Image 1 (tube, rainbow, N blue to C red):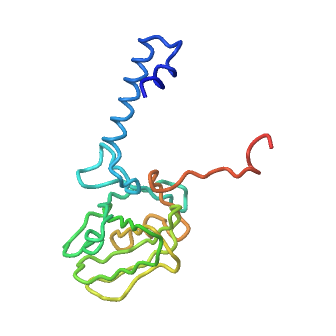
Image 2: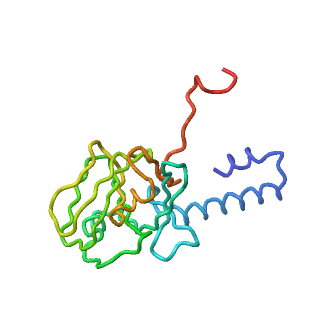
Image 3: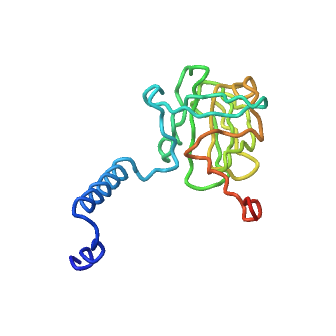
Length: 187
């Protein structure tokens, strides 16, 4: 191993090699402290209230509308959701993050606040929005597989011009488009 390192560093000053090692150690330290293994959950902004994450939606007019959400990304958190809450601020909700695309079902047992739910595909497109009445066991599920759902106060999506086909603006959840070879400039 020592021989391989010495061979690679021939012609490089000791100071340059030391700088390279320090830089690599810094990158490794940042990677270890920042990566928690859950790369699908959005990251709260420093200005967001504790325990809440800001997500955005593009409405019909092209405006970005923000919603502060709690993130439910474990089976335990998803099973409780917004149960037993007597009220919720107008611009708050809950983002449900699933491991796999599917037609996950929701009901309103023990949920006291009327809600609307948006079913969202992995690319950030809203498939459908449904209103849900409190303390009912009617099942709600999107018409096609989705990876995320967002619950907000009933009517919040409609009041903000957000409907099926609208997009969420969650950078860490919505993949950047990749140009196809035929759309690459110069080809």
